[in-house]
Image (cartoon, rainbow over all chains, first blue to last red):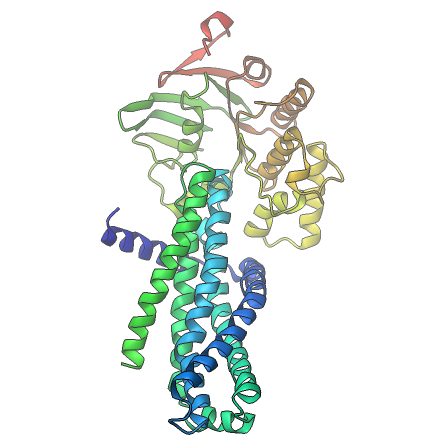
Length: 245
Length: 229
């Protein structure tokens, strides 16, 4: 399959998964299950990543600019860096590694054990039953995880600045809030929404397309992570170009 | 009644079904007998629309379904219960949830009514009190019974069984065969059983067909020497 036919097939799959009768009465429980799995399940690793993101960003930024600019600029720089880029992209890459692979493996296993055929024989649309809840849950979870990651990263950055760079919380906060632009925050969230769609669609798509056995399921999980990671970087650039370019 | 007329299916150059025609009368079970790998499962899946046909016509109660759209086919499938060879039970759901799934998805029954229906089905398949178990804690035979139970949940007109007794011990095999016969006699379920097991075919079939090298032929009597697996 060449790149263009893959993009066409992938897009058709995504549209087919969303443009279905939602049957919200029965689908809502599956959405909540997926929010628990994707959102709550990813929270610990996101927090850990965010703590270190904040710490490392502060260390690196201070190494580059401290002494040549006012110290509150550390807060400004960390804030904008985390909101525009690091928060959304690191969160998305972590969710991709954790969830896109598990979606592909789970759906792929259902494919090889004929569970998806069973859904069809029961007149249950597998696109609605399997894909829609995952896409909606990822769409809800990733932006929320991104906000949490940003708050944690800023907190850990402020903590490091206060304890090791002698920049009081008030000074850090001044830099953070004084040069705060809503566009930075919401631009990051818009990125997160695109990333969420890419992650869920890749996980479901490669799971759905599995033919064969355990080896192909493993391969689908790998493809899902690789494709969603590339998609995340691609949309990161495109959204940045539109909003910040 | 189900009518299958001149159905053909090929994969590249391999002809799996070649002008296959037969009919399933009401309250009758048709057995499609044949060695493994002859396309029996493909035939079942083609009839239900999961595998697209190359040629041929299929009628359910006089309604043509071979050209039906997905949404139309879903309505037809509500009249059919399908028992997979590998059971295809949802391993993240309990036995109860597996059986209840079609009811939850397609009816607006209360949870109490669904629970009663599930318990009723568990009684029919001989697994009362097992509803809380997950498929992983069931034996192969019990999984097969649950798969039949799930196929029964919407009270379908037709039941399709894909190798229902393959790989079962003799006692469980007899239990599954007895259940299939009971469902036909007491509950008037028509259907198709595909199997390569001669004893199962003889025990459950009203009409027996042999599928070999893509061709189907009706058997008046099973002769073991003609059945070359």
